[in-house]
Image (cartoon, rainbow over all chains, first blue to last red; front, side):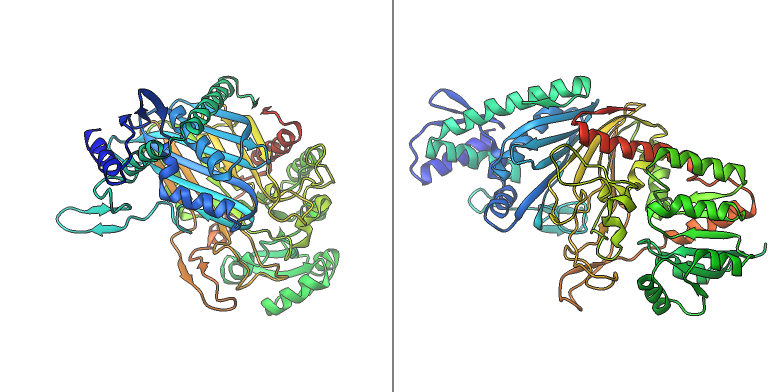
Length: 230
Length: 358
């Protein structure tokens, strides 16, 4: 966390933002003594571009958004679901009106429908060894075109650099100012910085409240395999 | 053993052309004749295959070739029962397309026909003869990722209705015209009816049957179709394994009358990807990859050129073995009945908006 705070302080100083912001954990920033949910995934470039494609006129007549995410064994499935539900709503600029969840220990599958009748399927599983990076795919299918954060005919995302030496390594660097941080860490710092700079806390607070309600509905659905209408 | 005298009927099914090579090249077979359902498919057949007698009538073909031992029913779903009766009364073995019928009374009549006449009736679910599936089955059997917890799969393609028009007609694809849900202009008979494979495969890989199923139909990406083209399915097997299945026509196509180069708009025509999540890990499989890629003729469009479509080789070998050695097919009518029942349950869930307990 110290490393991330140093990077945040660097940005606050460089851009002369006087707000006092402290990264509490990977999901929360404390600003002026108030804890605010970061929703840091919204600052990952792949999702910003998917949103631009979905809402900017590139895709026409969106029908389905398909999401799959595999995380470390032991991690909270519903925290992962919170993130994916937020991504669906935020990228589509739409609100989920009903959700059905089937759960089995370290896995869950969900179908959620938005107010515009877009169907979102979300597959979450917690199976990876400690230290493995999450595996994920986000795909939006429309009358005119498909947008996806995984390349066509591939199952995994590419990295920017592959090293085959005495030890095989790979690197993906996506932020010059925050060089050295992972994609997820960069998103945490960028989201905290944006909140400190723009002071638009209410949007995140409202989104967090709505998402917690959605997750509660998902947990309720999983208990009896019934659809929950919000 | 002597070669099997085999024929094909109708030639209207999208898989018709998959048989051309294997029926000609497999030394265990003697391809005797075909009958075509209309002039369009007759012309396509005559332009594709030489040296096989082609008849306009099924009865004319069967009367002219009493030596026929087996028939591939390469026909629309609504014709299957009638053609099975034709075969049964002559003691001819049957290779049925993937959907014998969605009408469960008709289905039981088919089972009775086959049993009464001591016929082999094999259902064409060709994924069982795919080498990636073979490997997946082996990984599951070897408990590679521990106890299986979820089975998530796509069986997504472009829509074949422009080349195989019957698939766009609810009465021919689903067997009758049933509104998909109240207030919706669409009818049953679309993408779901084209994609039974993953509903079958999960039963094999989990060694269990369906317990609960929930489905949603999404807005069509082809608004001019009167059937569904986008749907999502989740549920639970009786042993607790949860699943997520996508049987959509989610890959857009050029509306060609005959499949060929340039058919795909999205770079891929089809995809069957399966992710198995277990207690101790995950297995991710692309059943039709890796491939090669080009952006050449006819549309200069970046395109996936598939490198493996040989499932029909193993499928026909099994069919031959079943007939000559009087074996029950892996995918027989009785086994497949539960798969068809769960596909009907998908439609029921879409219609009622509620999960269906099986």
